[in-house]
Amino acid sequence: MACPRLATMTDDIDIAIVGTLTNDDLRRMDELLSQLSSTATFDSDRVLALLDAPGTVLFVARDAGYMVGMATLVIFPLVTGWRGIVEDVVVDHQVRGRGIARLLLEAVTEEATRRHLRTLDLTSRPSRESALRLYESVGFERRETNVLRYMPTPE
Figure 1 (cartoon, helix red, strand yellow):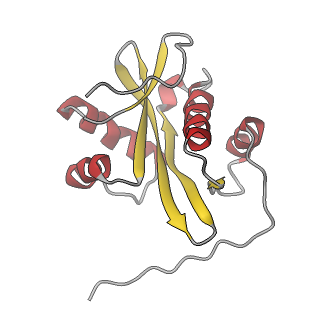
Figure 2: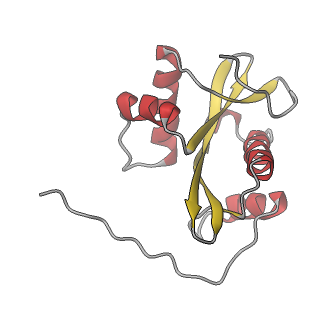
């Protein structure tokens, strides 16, 4: 199945929604995940399940065919309307500063608009000031809120 192209090529960067991943793609995602979080663990089965999940959309940035970034859009219905969350936005540290994260976020927001989502949220630590400026420049607005997290412990 052909993957829709959502952003024009800029500086040889191509942003697309992917429906399949190669073993090389999975290896690159593992490398990217380690740059995103020191505590996250990569699981190729989980990533492949993500591709088949009806409420998730995986965006990949490629430079001359080589995966250099990714972002995930999670879509879900609530009583108040269809909502979305942006997760796992990461660009390889070797190519940061070229606007790749902006292209990924623009592709995600275009897809959210196309799907008529009521809201699209993302979270970021306050210490990530440059990332916060980028998010705001793409159209995200800071909200006065608290994010609370419950972490179930395995039995």
